[in-house]
Length: 253
Image (cartoon, rainbow, N blue to C red; front, side, top):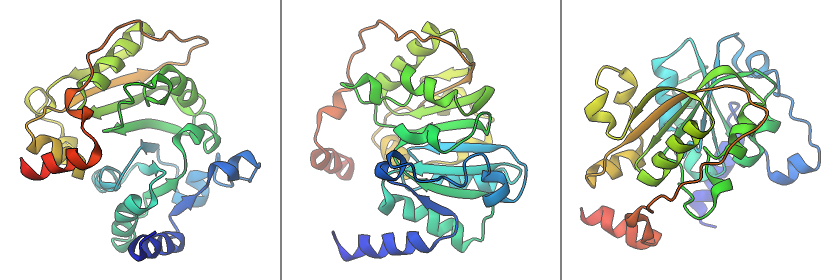
């Protein structure tokens, strides 16, 4: 591991608004003191809590926190070296309504009590075209989210992936969730929302390649059973490239 990463990990451990748990921590029964008490112990207020799952560098969590001081935001990801960017930025700015949780998203239901979270943002998640259960809008994740998201809480998805967008739309339809907004070209269709002013590092890369940004917002209603959509979706051709080749394409376009 490079010295730069080690330095970032060390600094992350020193930030008071960063919390880190491994899968082994959870499986071994380590007590999660913040569960049910995020507002009391971390934010020191009673404002709504919003999660960004797969937050990457944390730009969206920090941007939303600056835009909505009457809400509390928690960025969640397993990649600590990326998360360091948003964690350091928010720490240096003295922001009190943003925190970061480094853990596996599959374990997210262990960290929050019922009805503790008001909304979830999914910003450019891996579409996991070959692994349904790994998609952050798959029904197994919906089952997880409803354990701690309030009835009627919003799920937001922003994605460059037509595969992920189509799958999510089909999942929403199959399970009769109420759609508030759905568009396959966000910056053409929706123009009045101030949230559009926030663009992540990866989002800007996709825009620079000429790809459109898709967005769907739907209400999470608690259910006893779920239906996986039975639909064949054409894969995203550009994701067939390996990471190094994909990076080269981004650099050359």
